[in-house]
Length: 163
Image 1 (cartoon, one colour):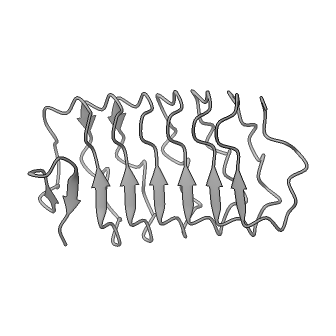
Image 2 (image 1 turned 120 degrees about the vertical axis):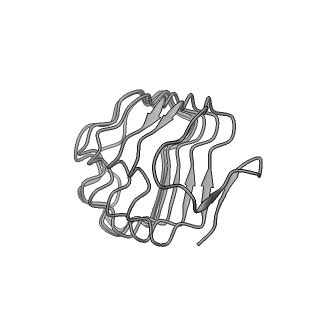
């Protein structure tokens, strides 16, 4: 499958599009899927994410984007996903985490960013994440993290959030 089908039933709670040949998702592709709580588009060929791709997924709690080729994301990409609890962006091509990338995601508990090329995390990147318990940053190119990250225990192979 090379693109997101336009006939996904609107009452689907789980949309599993993993392991295909999807390289682009049209903005608003999931607008009618308001019941969806889990979306998996991992193991595809996505390289760019438009800010409006996830419009309509207000009830989404789990988002899998792992093992694509994503190198950059607009800061407002996840802004409407207030119920998101877990985002898996492992093994992409991200090089930095922008200050507002996860802004407003107060329900977010787990962020998997392992296996990217992250060398820079901007101050404020994890601000607002009141529920965060696990932040996985292993297998990146981090040499310095600036900003308020004293709540992260970097002694583990992955990072554990202490609150």
